[in-house]
Image 1 (cartoon, helix red, strand yellow):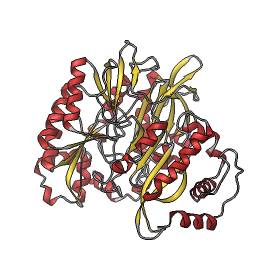
Image 2 (image 1 turned 180 degrees about the horizontal axis):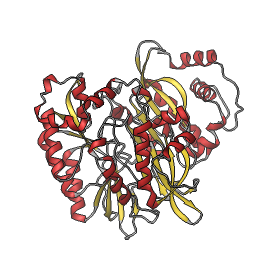
Image 3 (image 1 turned 60 degrees about the vertical axis):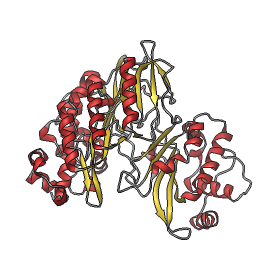
Length: 520
């Protein structure tokens, strides 16, 4: 088998052995190979951008007072910027290499790891932020994740996967989050009278995981996860970096063959999938807990949190005896407060926004700044928005009611910033990616396009956009929906969606209409 360049590096020198060189590195003379190895320890840097980022593993989004206090102290000392990720992790930005290494070591002293948070590793294992503390939780995921975390942090596995591997374990009957973009997702299900999990495999930012048709009892989650890990290490594609995820293995050989190979590492018999119990829940500022207190969802600025801002939340948590947890929605949860607590200055929203150009070289513009222009509209309707700054899809736009991907386009005059527009993912009980409606919408017209979509949603009478998508939007082909939106912007009187009859819309007709409406 012909290996790619990175795989050859791993064979010659496993990342864990490179770790011994950390104290001898000089920032000015790092090459691409050094930068690859550093990612295995959570240290990210590129030649085209000054400064380094340190990504910190927070299993299940849980972190203790002392650990967080140490982290914030080091961040303040280094004058770092804090960003929360969509995998419930913390990133420290604007560091020098020596600062990143120093903070990594200081955090290691208090039991916080940065290992495996980047590149070809088992990434942070996630769950719902209300795991174990609300009546909707049937199986607490935290004890399972703790055991799984020992597997993923095995030094011999560091950096040795074909590509990254994301995992979720959710024992909730209800969640405001969707977990189908994980490589492996264990989601609450019932088989006959037994509670356990259904297994879904092969998800990633641009594709939803498939039902593996396997029911997993609670006590089998850890051994089956370990078997999946070994399956991926043994059989995961290693020829091309762009085709190396578990998704690509399933695509190449099929789910049944993957399950057959899984038997090599998990010889026990399994049963077919049970009834999925995990249902969608609306986002709430407060959530009642079992102990008659509440959890408070602290809305961040799409993951941006100031050091002093975070420190004040930590002080509030310590004073009230609350836990701090991080969610996969880039927000902070205080577990165990009363309803008088409400320190967030930001409106509550269901928007997930990628790092953007201030933090990431791949993003084509500042997605967080652009998202600010949409937040009032989206918060009003509780619409789930996924905003990605590039085609890598870190904003999970295919798992959203409205998905946006940053592009540059010259289709309507001069080169300008724009987005690809996706609509209507089914991400709770049913699983279907959001559909691409427009290849290019200039940012200057995005608000107008969304106004048409929101007007139709409001006119439909549905309270939930996912339901509107299933009942109304899915009646029509994407080209027809694009034609309908453009025709409405041209002020052509049309019947409401749901009442208007679908028809075939040709490519030339659509391009002509786009030029008329979007032309500068």
